[in-house]
Amino acid sequence: MDKPIGIFDSGVGGLTVLTALQKELPHENMIYIGDNAHCPYGDKTKHQLLSYTKEICDYFISQNVKMIVLACNTTSANVLAELQELYQVPVVGVIHSTVHDFLTRKKKCPLIIATHATIESHKYREIIMHYEPDIQIFELETPALVPLIESGQYKKGIQDVLEHYFYPYVNKVDSLILGCTHYPIVLEQIKEVFPNKEYISSSESICQEVASYLGVHHILNESNDSGATVIYTTGDPHEFRYSSEGFFHYHDLKVNFLEL
Image 1 (cartoon, rainbow, N blue to C red):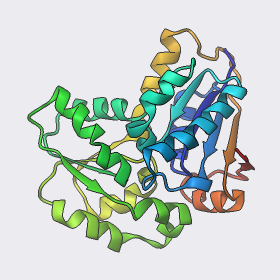
Image 2: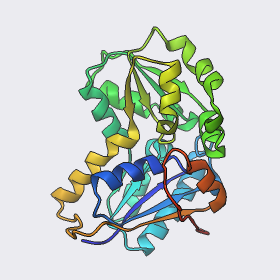
Image 3: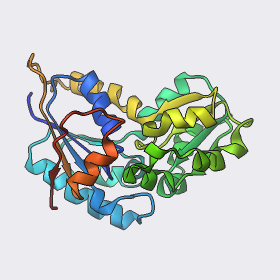
């Protein structure tokens, strides 16, 4: 089935999911939307999040997608169930697959870093405790990171910000759950100030779930050709390209403006 997969995030962070999906499913067609007009999502209300994501999902439906991937922890934590009720196509988020990935690591003291909205939902804690009630969980809002990443300032180094966030947890945790798809962009900087942990990325974790679903439901693209990808932003395409250069190593990245 050559219908595309729709993938969205508040900005460039979801490109970490797109890149992983392209590697896992090289024959699939994909449409990516970065909702930079409303970025960051982490400080938005649930009502706002549902409004923004419905507009995006409606666009995906108009493009006849076969699946919608919320490449965003904030929306996965707050509006996934509502979106699943609204649309006939499968809608998947990143949190359950990330928790599954974490549980396979057999760690006992994770630190979850995420946006305000994700941490406030306690969705990660809730799901982890359902399976492993004896695990000691630490949760940390890291609101400065997404704006820094979207502005491209992470390229100049954000060690001071990271040290401020992580210093209290250096000797308390054995693992770090990157509860935002923007965060793998600065994983190397994180490792420098917060070394020797197990790092679990929601961007990597979602790929197996998507591939499994498409396979079980016999809707994989069986073409031998490489899939086509179209990238949109609701913000400024030039700023989107600048923010993503250096991490994604896309050459001549074409970013289209999308008005919703």
